Length: 221
Image 1 (cartoon, helix red, strand yellow):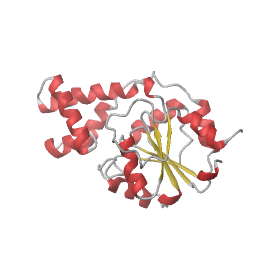
Image 2 (cartoon, rainbow, N blue to C red; image 1 turned 30 degrees about the vertical axis):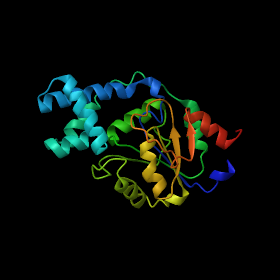
Image 3 (cartoon, helix red, strand yellow; image 1 turned 90 degrees about the vertical axis):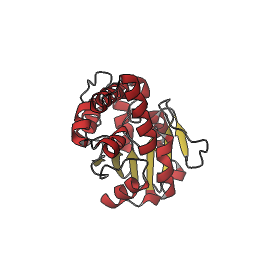
Image 4 (tube, rainbow, N blue to C red; image 1 turned 60 degrees about the vertical axis):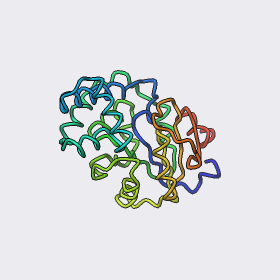
């Protein structure tokens, strides 16, 4: 293990565009269904629905949070609809599974999606047995990353000392609250970032390829 990371006891990973390449474009299917849902629920054309969707994403953290705040949407209905997609773009990733298995300590998924969707993604990737738990949007009390409370709740729920935890996410803005409570941060900079910050002082490590980075820190098998 890389000397600087020998104190890490808990490895926390975002799901979408982090545990699989952004090039798989899976989230684009979710994104389109979000636009469809907003269009139907609010009664606007798709271009206006898309504008609202992104406005809520930037202002509330997720489209769902914005819909709940402004239109009293049922989160279970919304998540069930937007996550009803095919996963053909995802492939079994044996190298990533092997690298995660070699990490010492606990491993968790921390996602603004819901657990049923996360489990389907993990199963498709061959990562179904790789993680102790999935901490999803319901476990967050429907308050998503990057709200600081989501990170405190994660640590409380799983008895995590943030000073001995590393968090990896493809959205740089989601790393700032993790760093603020003492976590080591890894930005999976694979082109999916949508809301970047000019300053990057809260990012400890940066990689375009999670599997390659894990291989580098773990050294030769």
